[in-house]
Length: 115
Length: 113
View 1 (cartoon, rainbow over the protein chains, first blue to last red):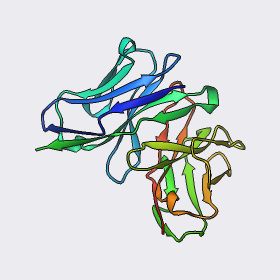
View 2: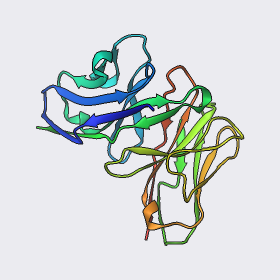
View 3: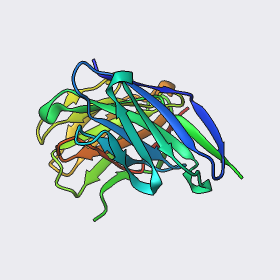
């Protein structure tokens, strides 16, 4: 069954530093993978998605993620953190097929950006 | 174009009371979903509806019922609320596009005392 594991429930970086949020997936078939961001007291917003078209995926707000099949990973990165990046980030994978496709989420990583 | 809307935003219930959470989307999506979010557990799927007229159980359906009223609306009902149902509830919809990304509402924060 498809699932994702996020390593590190809390990550702190200094403003301007590299952001690296880790996600590993478990899937018996080529997966569709997503990163969502949740700002305080808001719903989830799609950051980027991998659908097998390209291994390096660029998203909104300067984030990108690289799909590495050999490592079963889909880590999220941003070269330079901004205070506005402070939020909770969720990795997710599609399971099922057709109209019954469902998202399975990781447990989330809270990103704190220090001034 | 409001996307996915949810009402109410906040609700406090006493144990045993009932209530219905409302969700509507204006993106003409076929699929709709209800999730609950609890600290450290990510989002867990309660129920989903792949198309108008169909509903299916997700990971944590016990204590909930749903109704897909029409293509736009998908409601979640708690018949007899319990403190374990204190959570933030999110509705989402998906158009079934390749990749299956979902679009989320702002959430309903429910407290059961």
